[in-house]
Length: 136
Image (cartoon, rainbow, N blue to C red):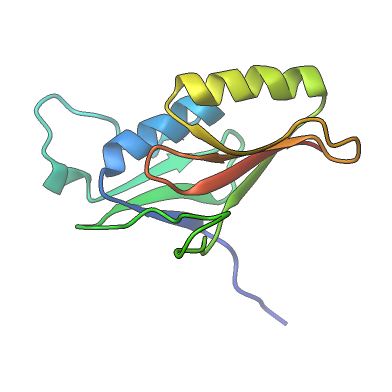
């Protein structure tokens, strides 16, 4: 029986280029051909951008929308609707990636680095989407 294939994960955002750049740098991804930044581009020209993983697979894409209130998760009135999970092999690498994410504009929502079973950080990207990096 044939089943659907995951083509992409789409993140809505008020600034597609900035959010794409955040994830491009964090995950060391490449723009889909034609989606690279261009001198003088306008926001209207960046309403849909895609990043590709080395070796292929589903793309991480960004859709420009007019207004998007950030989730307040893990507390508050607006829950997360989805989040991304990323793993690293060691606690030392988790610290290094925490520092990279913060330098790129992420903020920490939850610090569970000292959890003996699953050290992790829950972040918000610059648009407010939650994502986790943990030792896996």
